[in-house]
Amino acid sequence: MSITAALSVALFYGFYASQPFILLMGPSNFGAIIGLIIGFFMKDPTTGVMVGAWIQIMYLGMVNYGGTKPSDQFAASVTAIPLAISTHAPLGITLMIASLFGSISFPLDKTWKKINTNFWNPRIDKYVEDLNFQGIALSTSIYPLLVRVIISVPAVFVIDYYGATLIQKFLTNGPAFLVNSLNNAGLMLPALGIALFLTSIGRKNQFPYFAFGYLLLTLINIPNLMILVLSLILAALSYFISENKSKKVSSQ
Picture 1: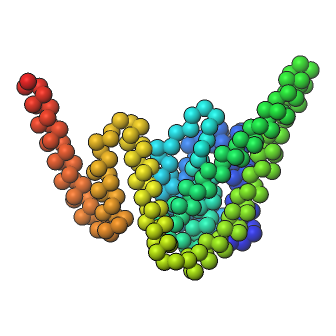
Picture 2 (picture 1 turned 180 degrees about the vertical axis):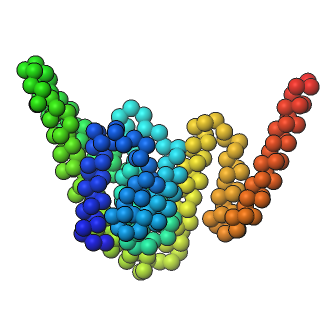
């Protein structure tokens, strides 16, 4: 990966992940959109969108409560997508990378918020007392943004720039059984994301159907048309079974 590409992605993360911008851009903070942007940086938007969409599915069931952020789709995307494009790593390996580096947002966010709380907030209180509107504006937007850039950009740059070489060496020289095992494990992560999502909306009974279709698509490599036909058959069976149960309950 070139220094320019790695630095562009790192700066994109540093500015985009800062509070003023991420609140404005809201829905675009998703894997597929981030993948499209990174893909344009690296001249491969197709791979960027594809990998970003898989990462987005992987994070379907992830919910951040309050100020906690144990893992972040954005951080996963800005590390895994550039590495996937530059190394042509298998999808499963890419998703394992995403799950690993998605957690870097936690220490970065924690450091950033600690600096804001201990350094900028007392100054904002002082500016409010003095009616210093310029100081208030700078301390609530520009200065925290710069701190976020200083904290985030080096971390993402190092992962993207040096990680590409390490991953390429691992794919080339690593034990085949280990590479294949990690790839197969990574291919299951989107299924886990949808399982968590189904659990959160109270549809646990739908997960077996999803798992069946996902395994057919990724591991057995059955054509999409055949999967569609099987899905329709299973959906019809599920409908008739639920209807029969409802009739039995109503007749009692």
